[in-house]
Image 1 (cartoon, one colour):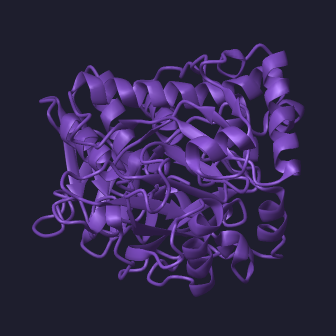
Image 2 (cartoon, helix red, strand yellow):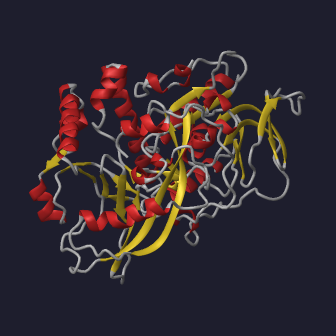
Image 3 (cartoon, rainbow, N blue to C red):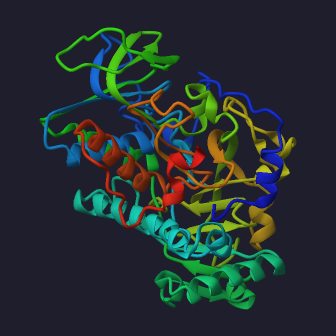
Length: 486
């Protein structure tokens, strides 16, 4: 997803009163990313046996935000540190299914694509040029950091990393007009990825028809795709490998409430008690890495982070020339202002089909856009019809009858501004949440945001534990800070 549609924001946040989010439902639809054979070796780790009851830091949520925060803490902490990650369902099941629109890793489409210029004029108008540029810089930083981790640990094959670029189809003249206006504004601002003709290319309708069998103009930018759960699994395993970093995972352990600690179970006083069906956990600091579900434990965010259901289908397409000689078998794609997004999985040897992961269709849902939904145990039949009809409408030669492998839903966290919320929890009583932090609200664009935001919030947590002042990175936009909500 490249930018938040104003239509979505207007319809989704016009509700007079938003309810706090539920806990994740126990019987979610089966996801290609999470439920394929052998995809999730950490699925049920820590779900039985004794509950770890004390830690320096508790991270609620085992998606890319929570695990990236744990990984960052393992890298920067010079002193011994104990961290517990708790997850309501299977590892990554609640917050990872739908990160890529992409949001959480369960829904997650696997698109690792930075937004280079979409929405540039709006961001510059709202936040000023410097902070607008930082919001694009953060995405570049996130992707380069993830690629650095993957390459330094020789994980390209393990996480199915593909460097295939990204193509954004422009289905209407108005869409093309807005895209070019944003690009021109970014070029005028001297934003290098927009200026660089190797990083941003414009393709005419004729070129697209000849190369890819679709009669729409487009822009092409750098982009990757991968298997998001496998990335998060490797991040967790790597963080666990540091002897002085005590990392524990408890899946199937939902947090029902948080209270101030009334006892001291160890030599270090603990500020908070997490209440779960399996018992209590005492800790000094908490990270809310629950994205769409944040308001379940933080009701003050019920009108700020809106749970929004996304839907994805995995389909099989024949790779023979009976479809089109130039059907794209690699790369990330988006269209219709980012409402639809897809990419073909790496081809399997001795197979005459390719699997395409396609998400979107929320614009046809009723009520609009699947906002205020936390139930990912079902699919929306209207959205399903939209998804199945989409590729045959866009690419000549694709059969109307498509083989469906899996179809699933996941819950994204959309914010009223379209921006993430990162940092210490704040409200009218500035001491009421001391030591509690959040990184959430990626508005369907989590893959190029979550890892970088997790780095920032991990640094905040450790600085506060050490009695130091957090220094904002040069690439971090000030308008992402949670204190903007005051």
